[in-house]
Image 1 (cartoon, rainbow, N blue to C red):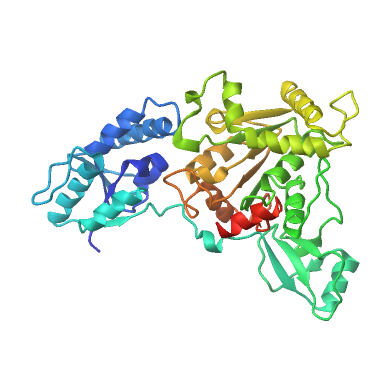
Image 2: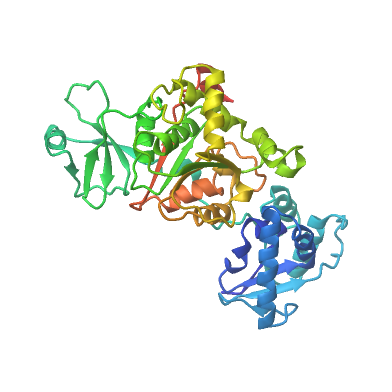
Length: 448
């Protein structure tokens, strides 16, 4: 098989600094225009800056293995070239545009006889490449098929005898069907009269059996309102699960359930964690937190308002947990705000931007990463690797509502981690499909 040439766009390297090593023993080409863009980004304090500095250091290390103009050896057996972007002949391209300079190089390499593939996260750039007759692809590594994403639970048809065994022994041993560890089950038994509630269980690989769920779940006065939320409550309140992912469209309750269960484990009757850390990526309009006026906490309030809305709702529902407040809790927005302020001031709740998590080590906490669909797989890996001893992390989001221009439902970090970690004893996942916010919200999520 002839050697292939993969020419990388800047956004691929920003998306995943390890992309250099994703093309087997083929040749990877980085145009000098991309190096110039990385040089511009390296002073940034956000993700772009961090990844730009990382990839430039990596290229510097590779340069010791040979001349970059001729092809320096990569550790996976391939070669890395850094090439100038001369103008193509007989093609009318506006070379004042960086994308066109990169495509110009791809065209020249193809005309010289090389089998060129242009790799970019930018759809428009790929379209232009295809129009020039250049093969173009998205960066396919770390992608999953969202339409068939593991949903974390399934329906299981059983006999009357098996159902009787489940009730008598508090478990149903499984010998044939293949389940993922911590996969949830809704039993169906033809011929048996419908029960008041669905019969639900969870598969435990260590026991090779499905065990029943609790008959009642509640956290901070919040109760599950459908079967999928019951699965989510069981997953989030299970102290043996270190990482949980909740995926669902708007109104399915993923953020509310995560916050309620997280608070229950921090300020409930049997607290397990020292604090609740809630973080979101700063993605709207593509602007970083520094563009807003005020202190860091004042800036965060703009982006974290959905979190505060959910916290206020929880505090208005909770009438039992008054250990953190000398006065008897009562419903009402003013009382709810006072309780939230107390929790924030005392450090029991910490609201943070994703930007400030990088580099930390976080032990004995429960972490909620909301809107995680706006993170790349590399970013999710970085965040999860921050988890210290005794910490639980919950990632929530809707892969169908992505603000990051270089991610989609298949390539975002939330979908990727839900798929990759779906069969481990310390991880679990639930796909929520039923909107409970309001009839209008449900209609909008379904039809618009």
